[in-house]
Length: 215
Image (tube, rainbow, N blue to C red; front, side):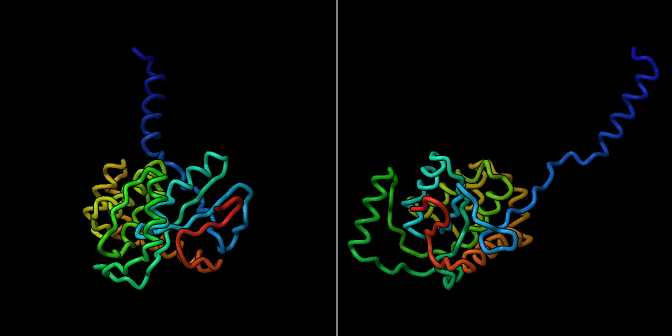
């Protein structure tokens, strides 16, 4: 048996440990382009995308290519069509040359591409993905890829919370935390912040790049 003094120290250790806040420290938020405290950094590329943008979809392997060349790529959400309200609208036809070019790029990237029939309200999906990027970054590539495929391969409604949550769960995201952020508006606020950043430096469309060696 432990000597009594050792036992007392052990009990005190258990009591004090239980009172400690052992959760990870919240890192300071990194300034976005245009925000106070931001400055261009060598080797850092900023990239704005939207899940409904076919150019973002066929090019979403580009961040990985840049990372393999030693660059840091920070991906931010930007609604390409903020005028689209919940429920979406019918897709306006692209010209044949644009269709063919995008289909060729998709083939070269090894991506399936099935043209959606509607232009969705993409903000909920962007909000979920941005929350994951900020708070559970290990799962961001998976959920981002899944939501792109949901729209451009499987024809799923990326405005639907059950659809978003299903892909989040498959990507290893904590649904409890994500749901809380979606309910309290903090996930949506992150999309507003990213949009304000984009506008402040003149970015209006997707995909858009800012930084060295940006394509």
